Length: 246
Image 1 (cartoon, rainbow, N blue to C red):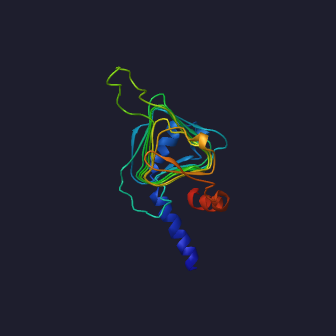
Image 2 (tube, rainbow, N blue to C red):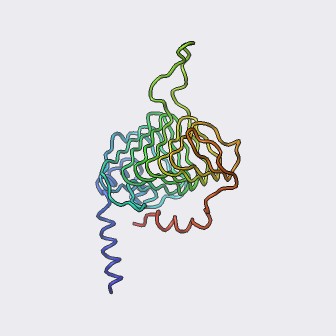
Image 3 (cartoon, rainbow, N blue to C red):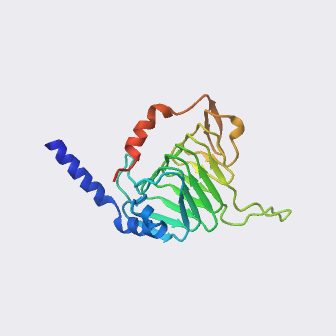
């Protein structure tokens, strides 16, 4: 009896944590009725919609709560209530996407942001996409990290007057384990099966280093070969704790 009561109260607490106003508004604003009624996108807690005039495209089967924004799947559960969501460009989902609490998420006009199957952004992550950001299957970004594909301001060579590109695409491979407080900057490209150490800065193409590598430092460089997360051993646990069941 006690276990049944715990389950009932747990489900009540879960449903209470959903921001139903934002969830219903977003789904029925962005999708045809048959898709919207499945509630593929679920928002939790306090979240500010800056602008959601853009497009969201789901590739493959549509499932309820396949996109969770503000989901408390990490150890720290208390939210600061500062989450912001802005979608002016295109957001592409290739399967479940899990985003933690207090995230700033911005896809600018004409920009494309794409996520692979079971990708994730941890709490307090900042994502600013003005051109293109692509995150591979099973790739997770640790808390307080940032993915920013723009310099935000025009920069030039003080001698020649030549302007540097203001933005450059970010492409993260599949099965990347990005630790906390990592900065992923314009032009960063990683191979599959890559681990990035905490407090690192990635700003170039690392694919020539091969797979199963550990990157770290400012700027990031190769730290170790033959290094990988035990993805096969963890996949079922990740599905259990991250996938949302309405």
